[in-house]
Amino acid sequence: MTLTPEEIDRYKRHLVLHEVGGQGQQKLKASRALVVGAGGLGSPVLMYLAAAGVGTLGIIDDDHVSLDNLQRQIIHDTGRVGDLKTESARDAVARLNPHVKVELHAERLTARNALSIVSQYDIVADGSDNFDTRYLVNDACYLAKVPLVFAALGPFDGYVSTFRGFDTGADGKPLPTYRCIFPEAPPPGTVANCSEVGILGAIAGVIGTLQATEVLKELTGVGDSLAGRLLIYDALACRFENVNIAWDPANPLSGENPTITDLSIHEQIVGADA
Image (cartoon, rainbow, N blue to C red; front, side):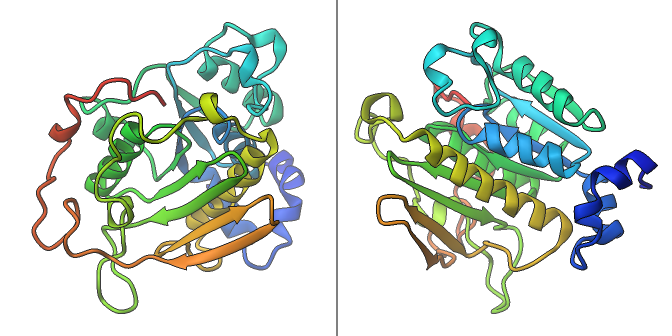
């Protein structure tokens, strides 16, 4: 996919990178990335993927912009309070880079639509804020064989990893999925959300930017993938840590005797907001 003269000028800082260059930028232009959630994580992910020239961005979110979002969800502004997050995010992307096509999914991700939506894209960035959606996205990406760049936030911390459980590592064993770390979701009500415990807004920017970087690495093939590793950020100590993740042969999705072979396990789950 060729670049126009305007795109060559826009992306010149990429083009002079030996690791990216014209071929890598053309890969980005031809790529399709789905961002789950246009919130705290989705905001920097969408902005940096758009700025980088990812050709098509899908956004799935059924929520509306509220005033208390704006402390961390920087893709939206005060004038968009009450609007659909997908539409607000689309307009921000258009202002930043009109060369990027945006596809809106102003709906809840469910067991009925997850596979059909995920399968339309080359990669997924999960910026959801609840366990129901995280497990649904993980399972859908595994079944559709679509790479997943996962991120999650705490009040002063964050986590990023890449899941390619349908691939094998250098040792010949399958790479891990989210269920290799957490086979099942914690019981409802046992883990507080950010509305209950709060979050330092800039944490979403740090982790979302790292998440966007990993998406760009996966799309261009640059550097070492986070597949098989979990990156942990502790803002109060200003410390990053890498933890190795191994494939769990007993996990119910990609283990030796999988019990999850479709998304029917998610059909009874409600409240899985993106």
